[in-house]
Image 1 (cartoon, helix red, strand yellow):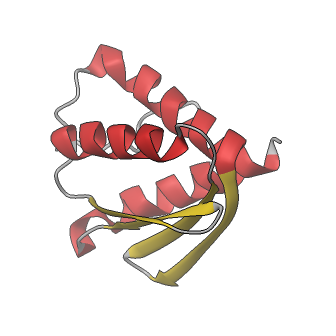
Image 2 (cartoon, one colour):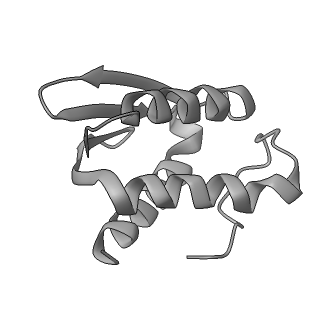
Length: 111
């Protein structure tokens, strides 16, 4: 899914930086994703394998994403050998969460 058309207009990240940010998310998903679920239509839950520096990587990426796409709500919960990342959006941004879920699943399958 290399097309960035799913990125909403409300995203304030400069257009030329978007492919780099998407690549960062893809790397996180392909390297660390152990499971994903969709407990509710507006909520995506990811479990990421923990390791040295991983929690910091996730928190940094989440902070930068929150800065340009304020419609996301991220909750990072560290646990035993796993970091849970809950991502929520409002109703208007459900298609963005759908695209993120599809992208996450695709990155996981490429392992």
